[in-house]
Image (cartoon, rainbow, N blue to C red; front, top):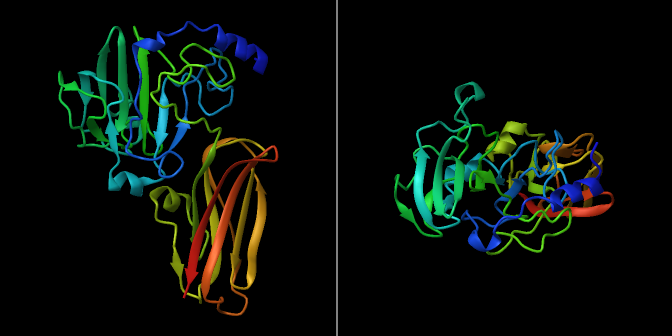
Length: 316
């Protein structure tokens, strides 16, 4: 077992990248914490365990890039543009793979639809899991920072819609968040023009329904209702989360015109890349008071708030 202190020593002794050689712009048309999030970072642990650059577990063994995830398949269908994080020349691409295909159909093509861009001086970027038919560049094309490459998809080995962005120098993976291996603390340098803030997990969405939704409905973006009839058989609030750890607490509450409808702390029993929890209450008198209801979902770790979302529901 590698302790946090030992892991910090390993990371701090990593071979430094030439930070002055490349700077990355944010690669998506979305806002972190609102309509996208970082699901997984690069694995910095050389052992069979997995740790991200802050020595947390928002990664998996041998993950060699950064995963920028969309909240659901509805967002993917609406279209979110992937943009060149750095200027260069397209040296390879693939299109035509279906989004959400079974793993048996993607062996050897786990990146799915994607683009590789040669940045010069031994640097290159790779963009994976793009939406089928969305690529907007051609082999050998010069691209500038911010040029559209395609749309976020779920092609290749992808359990959810996301962009996997890899950075390599002379063929070796480089973590743009910690190119010099700063251990477990916030690195002094990064390879981002504007470094995305680190979050060790969080909330993807909060939603309301008149029954417990299925996980597939949530992942599809079909579960949430902003308006329900006042004779709804039940009122349900759910929280959709990512990067949760064992003993994290999901605090859910729903209040209406007459006060609190339901509230509960749900203790999470195991680490999960993505998951949801829901609580609800059946109508006691046949109808609910009409008006505006307010829901809150809070993710806590060791008693500290990691993330929180609020939302409104109207009964009429």
